[in-house]
Length: 280
Ligand code: DGL
Image (cartoon, rainbow, N blue to C red; front, top):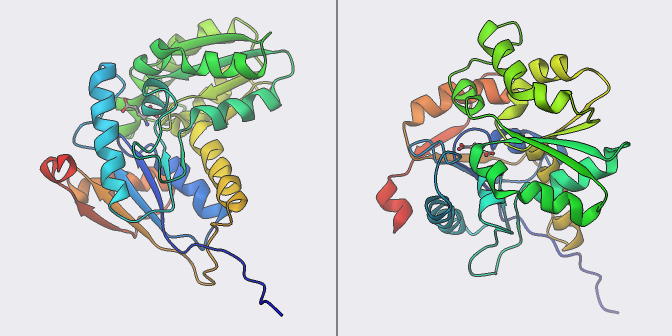
C-alpha cells in the first residue's frame, strides 16, 4: 500500500521593506506560524521609498527581491505598501516563488469589515498617487467610496521613535492627515503603509472606536499563511523558527530601532548588506 506523504517545506519565508515597517508583518507571521524560519531585509540605507519615482521604487524593489531570492525562500512578502502599490501586482520577476504584496490582503480584509462601503486609506505619497488601493477595493466592491490621503511625515516620525499618542507632534500630524478622512464618515481605515501600526493608538483615538483599523502588514501575514497552507508549504518543524535580519545600513541601529517595532527587547541576529551586494 502506498505510504501517505504530506508535502511541507522547511525553507524560510522572505520578507522585505524599505526599512523597519515590515517588522509589523513579521510580528504577525511569528504569532500565526511560530515554527517558520524567516529572512527579513530592510533597506534602511535607502528609506524612504515613498517620496521617490516609480522608476526608482521599481529598481529598488527588484534588487530587494533578487537579494531575498538568494536565500532559497519558499515565499516572498513585499511588506511595503509603497512597493506593493507602485510596482503594480509586484511579482517575483522570474515567476518562480509564491509572492504577495500588502495591497490585496489589506483590501480583502477591509472590504470584509466595511459596513457602509466608505473606506479610508492612508499611505506614503507614492502609494496614494498610484491609486492601487482604490482600484483593488473597487474590484471587490464596485460601489465603495474610497477616501485616500498621504501622510509624508509619518514614516520619518516612526523611524525616529516619535509615536506616543500624547506627543503634541503626533497629535497635530494625525489631526492634519486624518481630518479629511474622518470628516467623510468612513467605518474602515486601511493603514496602507507598514510603518503606521506604530501610530495606531494615536490614529484610533482620533478616528474613534467605530472605525476599524486594518494593518496592511498583519493582513499580508494572514494571507501568506493561507497561501502556504493551500500549497502544502507550511513547515513541519516542531521547534520555534529563527529569523535572520539583513539591513543595508548599520546593524546596530537596526537592532536599536527594531525594539519599538517588536514591542520588546530585540535579540535577533542582524547582518549588514552593502548596496553593491544588493545590486549584484
Ligand atoms: N513601510 C513602507 C511602506 O509600507 C515605508 C515607506 C517608505 O519607505 O517611504 O510604504
